[in-house]
Image (tube, rainbow, N blue to C red):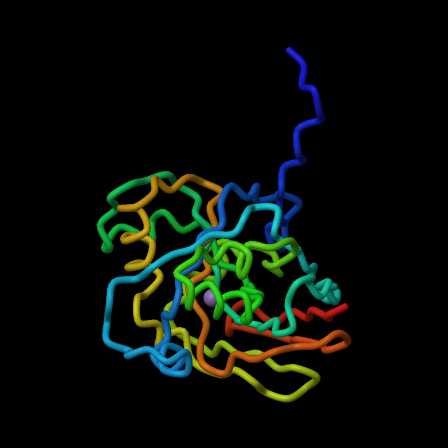
Length: 232
Ligand code: MN
């Protein structure tokens, strides 16, 4: 058996403090999962069911600890926003997972930024079109290493924040998630069978905004440290 073209390389990110890697299968993202962010996007923060979109696995832009990642400013947009997020990494397959067992499927957590072409998203919303070009573009998922639950535990509280050029733009607490990681994983598993290697971006707090070339984003979640990404 041979392929006409070489298969795409496996997308993998390191496990923090280990030589092992986490092979990425799919990237799911939750929309509007912090009340104040739902409000700033013009929505009623009533607890409507979570909704999801996705990014391709090779949208991952891995940022090593201590390094500064380089996010290439994407084409076809004049308004590219950061969305700092806690990312849950799935380590065990499941579908229709009850919320009280959902965390058993989470292998670890990572820092992530859901980079968004906000102008394309606004146009897609207005026209009832899909969000793929707004959300799933190349390098749209800056991601730090995966921290195993065996080292950091489950993260249901703690600060989540992001600065741009040293100025604080986002600050909230993971406890403010409308749908907790467990509830999100449970709900997502009623829509898709989850498999090891899936990543779940759990949503961003208020304070999203645009960046321009040269800006330095720095984001963190208590227990996971921080990471830096420059817009180039
Ligand atoms: Mn997001």
